[in-house]
Amino acid sequence: MSDRLLQAPDGQWRCRWCETPGFDAYRHYHDQEWGYPVDDDRRLFEKLCLEGFQSGLSWRTILAKREAFRAAFSHFDIERVARFDEADIERLLADAGIVRHRGKIEAAIHNAGRALALQQEAGSLAAFFWRHEETGLPPHEVRGASDGSRTLSKALKQRGWKFVGPTTVYAFMQAMGLVNDHAPGCIGRNAVDRARARFRLPT
Image (cartoon, rainbow, N blue to C red; front, top):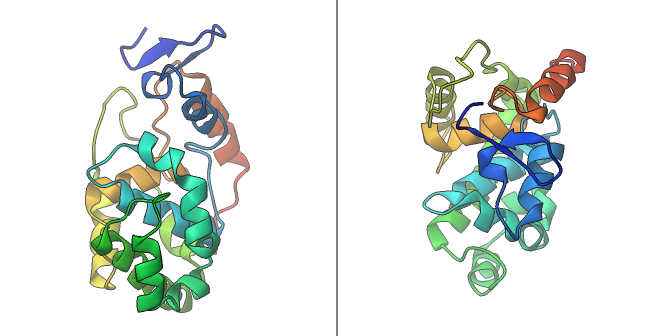
């Protein structure tokens, strides 16, 4: 078996990263969300924001705070976040339930405005992001970025987005189904492939 796999207490083989003692939410996230294709603009925006907040931290930290983030950021309603002002920034900086980093908070608000512009340009965030779907990557390799994430990162930066480096964008692509990075032999890999086969590309 690959060193990327670990057999869970239920006997199933999963990506090693999701098997964290005392944190079952990781396994649930891995089994129910990670890698499944998403075409909902709010969820896509949320995930890209949260990946920005994760920079320098672990996804476990962000996942544990995700509900607090959703409450603080109006459930990542793009139009509402784009209207956040200085009072909202101060409110967020005082919220112990989230990551209180001014630069990341301001970037999320700024990116909401960029997301609205991108919706106007491409019809939806989903339509734009799914143009950058990446297939055929060697499944046994562990990577922090890819050609696809570098291309998408560059495209977003050209449109004024912040905290969207290639590594952040690759983690977003992994989570939202634009690449299937479940390890070979993981119970999630074939399940994600089946979900992608049923998925209709957004236009």
